[in-house]
Length: 92
Image 1 (cartoon, rainbow, N blue to C red):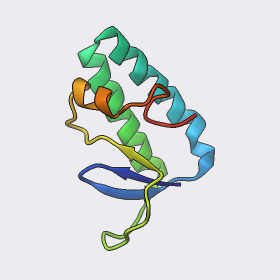
Image 2 (cartoon, rainbow, N blue to C red; image 1 turned 180 degrees about the horizontal axis):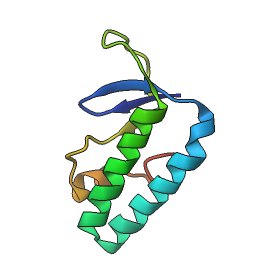
Image 3 (cartoon, one colour; image 1 turned 90 degrees about the vertical axis):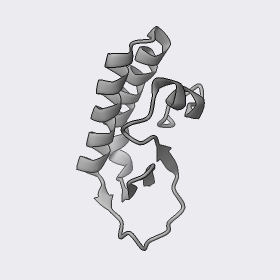
């Protein structure tokens, strides 16, 4: 699966990593619902770091269709709330 981190680029992730990423996504949703700004920020960074760690960066000149788009690390809780579907950032 091709994942884009807004403002950074694309990475290719194996489907086998989605269970681990969904746990972080669930935490992020809970923190957003509770209005936990510091927890949201911490978990968003953990999610993005995990995608960077597990993913294989695509060359800057590659323009593959992204199956998943994640917010940039400096996104606010409100900006991410607007991006979310009811299922979170990562489709389960």
